[in-house]
Length: 393
Ligand SMILES: Cc1cc2nc3c(=O)[nH]c(=O)nc-3n(C[C@H](O)[C@H](O)[C@H](O)COP(=O)(O)OP(=O)(O)OC[C@H]3O[C@@H](n4cnc5c(N)ncnc54)[C@H](O)[C@@H]3O)c2cc1C
Image (cartoon, rainbow, N blue to C red):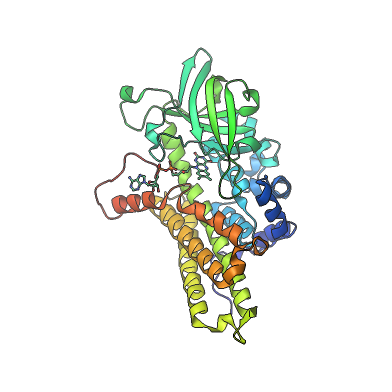
């Protein structure tokens, strides 16, 4: 029996993405995972087929698809057992340039991002000392003639080693000199190739899963003044405006993961015979999977509702955050049920379950942690006192 699919009109997209993924089976990801290596061939294949240019308007060489279609692309990648974390930023980080850049910047960068000759994969917001409290970040960009001079440090800047460009959030006016608390931060689009080893240092951070993340140090890095995107001092708002789409897209990846875990576990439960009967005949095995399926369907509905609202021009902050939280919970619940269903084999690398389990854990924390989403819902929907600063959300 098939269940209702809120994305049924995107069947052709699913099939196209699944075709690309078919060339990258579990063995490919296992090998990369062991070496903590970047899936360059996979990213190249997605770029070649145009999937990462989905949201770039046609006038700049993309396919001008909406967020729902983009969510289906990322969901399908994960549903097939692949991982879009190595490249999803190529899809949406350009939104900052598209929405807030000037005509010259769009013309200069978007066609290259669309055809993959320019990689915009790095997004430098988080810092070691300020964490989720973005307004406390310490990296500065000081105007000096027709340049800005950047000093400071970022952490968890993912894919920086595999990116030409980086969107950077830095303080241009000291915090005690701004009128509004949210003023004084600015967004820059930096061509890292011009600065590597000359004021810019990238250091990889090894993590529990294969995620090409880094820390970045800026030491008097001089960037041209026209790297500024939009108006100086308004960068925090620009970054916030991109976060709803990012959260919805990451939520879609979690939906894909949840589908992969449940399908994998159900298949195993049908085939694995213990005590003379398939383990899936036991309700103790069925129920966690059925419960995970129910939660997956509920999360999927809110993810695509949030995407539809976004496409209709609304600002679905509550829906996007709720979608991110419920989808991350659904994938984590499915991951847990999948490991349990597999028994000892859930821990064996060759089953891919333990790798996906490690990968799924991230979304309780990034790009926004569950607690901060709950803080946001408590404040925005329930009218409770705000329990955090002007944090992201
Ligand atoms: C693998 C990986 C990739 C990442 N990629 C990027 C990237 O490309 N670019 C980027 O800018 N960032 C990136 N991040 C950073 C990510 O967005 C942050 O880790 C995340 O937002 C949480 O921030 P933090 O780690 O500083 O935690 P903190 O802000 O230090 O919080 C720690 C814990 O305390 C909780 N907490 C904090 N304040 C409150 C509060 N007021 N109420 C209740 N609980 C609270 C949080 O929920 C969290 O669980 C990445 C992180 C990881 C791990």
